[in-house]
Length: 167
Image (cartoon, rainbow, N blue to C red; front, side, top):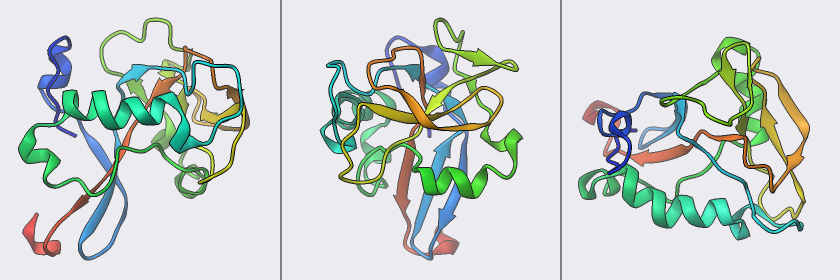
């Protein structure tokens, strides 16, 4: 995910991504790095993913910081997080689940030199806890309270292409 951010020179250099699924005209890409630490929702209450503070920030503030106007033209839909189903599909390879942070991890929880990062709950499900991946690459389905500010954000985007040969 190439990006542009006024306060993070690492972001302006561009980011690596991993293709987690594809069709003839769409690629779903997982960021190769955790971009920042952020809570899912500031208020200690149950909330659905699309009603969460993080979802709203990703798709208003951060989308403008991380992508140029040209890049935005290739995005299909919104910035998302990896779903539990997607995480289980790729979790067979723990190394693939492990992730570093862009820059210093700061207050983000770490394990085995890698950072913890959020997954998202199923569409429409309201909960006060959200699943995450540990630094060791393990999935915590029980999750952490939505208000936890020390879990990283590893975004997922879907890009559209005319056909497989156009990239």
